[in-house]
Length: 223
Ligand SMILES: *Cc1c(COP(=O)(O)O)cnc(C)c1O
Image (cartoon, rainbow, N blue to C red; front, top):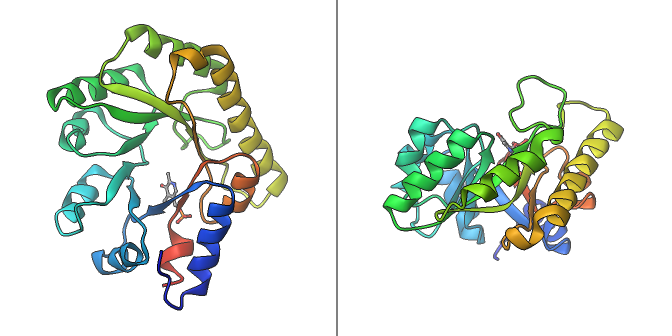
């Protein structure tokens, strides 16, 4: 990594690294020029929440960027990203899982996915209800998909100033992760990621067991 004189971003990176977690740069709505600034510091994992935006940007950016989809993914968009996407964080239905498996098979590859869990209060947040995560994952295992791999879970805390509530939600995500591991660990050899934490709450997320934080504004506002 090469932060030149950017001590803010360097210290964020060091915090994330001290937990052995991955820093995913959320590049949505950012210009290619600013994305390149972060690329030049050494960041290679980038996340977009809309397929259309990703496709528009991608061809003008370095080919060794590993692209993650972090937002709600419509089934009819999977075919546009299936040949290159590095990870999909937002699997929240069986139909979507099936479609990812189908499209990945066309390219003879396996797509790593995370199961999105809904712990926040807002109705706007997507995801599987905590009480249904185990049965959902069991259903996926039973399908024996050849071209889809479950690498972990993803979650988002509520949009609130209440730190105790955010912490409780992160703990819930972490405990769901552990429950899945206990129940189906041997069936899920790649199950190791907990994608949680954004600019406002990533330190709390790391302390609660996050393995991957998704950071946008705190990085781009410090360029
Ligand atoms: C936009 C977004 C982020 C990053 O948000 P910041 O607050 O800018 O860090 C993380 N995760 C998801 C799913 C997002 O849509």
